Image 1 (cartoon, rainbow, N blue to C red):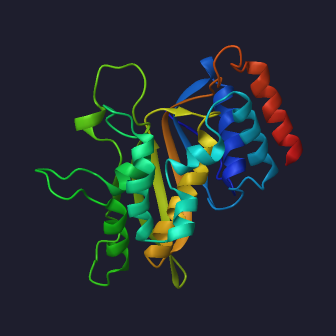
Image 2: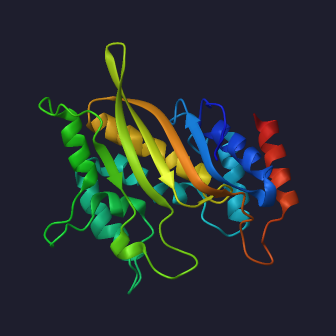
Length: 259
């Protein structure tokens, strides 16, 4: 069983239609929701009125704002400031020590898993993004559909807890010929997905990740596909700021007015 929305032109449109679909399901949740975005770079900043409206809503509930959620996938401002490969080192030395608490198995940054995946038997961790972009550019690599990005780690993520841990599990980049150009598509899988607190920030972060990998790999940005194996229209915040179903309906109505 799956649920899919028609292909959407941008992040905002995809977010709205996905929320509407899942909100209309029993218990406001669904399995195997498919989201397709033609241009994952479009409408992906706080200058967009809908992004700003959702961001203000999240801040009013004392939960992570849009940019914070997006940065867990790709640290956009850090990359703009230092460029590649310097921003990898800056992230590891400046960001991670502040994000990770003693005893934590991971920092909460998916980007950490992308650039610092432990190697079997020890040794230097694997920077998956460096490896993917190297192979994308290499004229000797003939397999053009083997650009996988692992986030889930069974050594660290399998436990008996009810909550916490990674939700984004896997990504798969694919090169697609479009005329004389090659476009880089990305398909990702989430094991669990909160559509109010996380989805819009996730889509924006994934678009920025695609922009980076495509530029480093000498390709153009293609389409983004997100598979939420479990999705829910959540009610962000804790009492007394926990949101209600009416709050979600009002948020969607405001976003509809903004276009």
